[in-house]
Amino acid sequence: MRKTFKTLLLALPLVMAAMSAAAADGAAGRWKTIDDKTGKVKSIVEITQDSKGTLSGRVVEILHSDRGPNPVCDGCEGANKNKPVKGMTILWNLKPDGTNAWAGGTILDPANGKTYKSKLKLQAGGAKLDVAGCIAFICRTQTWVRE
Image 1 (cartoon, rainbow, N blue to C red):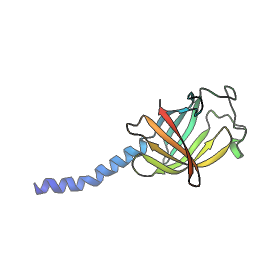
Image 2: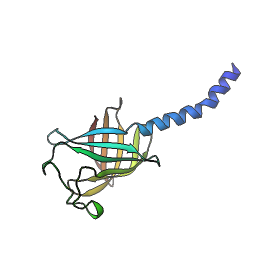
Image 3: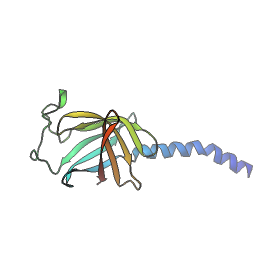
Image 4: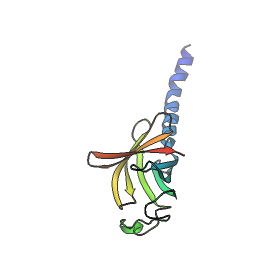
């Protein structure tokens, strides 16, 4: 009995590490972005985990846009200026921040070219993802749906 208890106690850190790694992958995948006003699916964003363990996301498909089938980020500055939104990285540097949550990253709104501090929260069941863009302590949250 004592040996079994010691074995379980020694295995606990390994189990916790495995659970932590699973949580980091929890938001990875393809997500449908939903237009706040119309409720229509606007695009598909693919979130991946990079070699440093941080999450990033890029637009892989444009499904609905008020600016035509191949919009560009005309409000962006720097390397993204006038580049196609399809293929553009719009989320980066999101690090684990608790169970099924990530923070400390940046999100780009390709409609206006502005960037915001960002955080993600995976909803129960993993089918929906709350994506927030923040200025100071004021955040606007969208719910994305897993594809």
